[in-house]
Length: 549
Image (cartoon, rainbow, N blue to C red; front, top):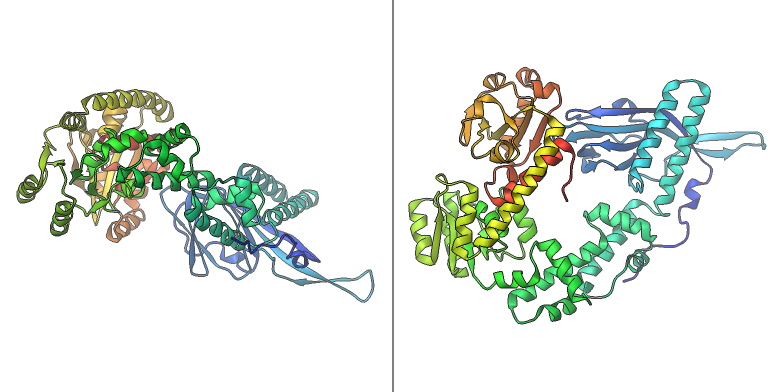
């Protein structure tokens, strides 16, 4: 693959005779969607540094995700709008500046400055976000002092900052770097079995190794070597499914020279050793309930057919789409049964595991296709469900080991959360279409209130699953903290957006104290072992900014 990059400074002339003058700087905290932010600065260049939060920024009808550490340069005339993804605020540093190009006068003592366009625009590379944040705040402090020397210092720091951004652009716009980065990624897709290093990949892209490593992870969410290993392991799983190779041969075939290193990386990514994975593929297991998928995976059993609806099982779809060859539609939509029935028949499972919370006709037809286990959904809790499935599959020891490990994790999490939020009362809400539900403590809230022993508001202590409530009723719950589960469809999103504009909503204690946490149904509405483990980890992130992994 040939790189399109040049090692020469192709933009040197763009900076020749270029001047800058900082005109304004401030830190902005955005607490709700802002359709047209900072319109008074539209005629200026703007450097935007995202300090905290997550959302999106729309410029010139193009919407881009923004998150902590992102840096953007907007040109004069570009309007921008900000949209936040949750009730948490989006914090930005905004620096407005003018650019000029000098023109020599008739003598050496005269210089004419004309307005110019800064040669770099769009998303910029930020290699050290924490250092960037510190410098931004120092510049703002100096600027706000308003005396001449402090303003001069702010101007000097700003010049230095813009110089470093230009250097990290590596003599080409960020868009060019992204293009060559994508070329190397596509090349890896077909040559993953070869020997790779960061230096080799960076050379192909015409970038420095450090910048390539940073840009790859920022663009694709993982390091380049993790990406290569994922490609190799995906191919290895395909070969394991065919059952014709030994682990040693498979590891060598996909690019791992060391069988033991391959086994370690495989278990890190899949949660099970290669030998266990191969053994689990020998049984053709189907499930007709998303939560049962979570139970099977806790038992190190990957089903061959399972519901992978993007709305309710995005996690399993993203992580196990290759491992689960038959993707079933949402089983609780009656119209999906005909398609799902044919898919299960074609898969020809040995075992079917699902809940008894299905239409009687569906249960009868599933029972005729293979040996079927129907879990008593309402009568027993998720722990008993896991043990029943473990006993049915001959993996009862694995079920007990998983529960012991889970209880150990939850005990540690309880202590962390107790230090983070104390005795604050908690309420989970579910927004579905135009209806608001309070979530009970016995089923939906079992992780928070039973395993993590957080304090529910009095109104839901004896509530089993859900209860419809009005906004006026919500005002009497007096929760210190709110978790709001918002269904992904547009009517639910619209209702949630309008609800947040009401006087009743702003009167809530949790809203006033900024203790509102918007989350998605996946995993918060999943009643399974894996689902509960993920809810516990998400709770630590929400309340304690703690990342277990």
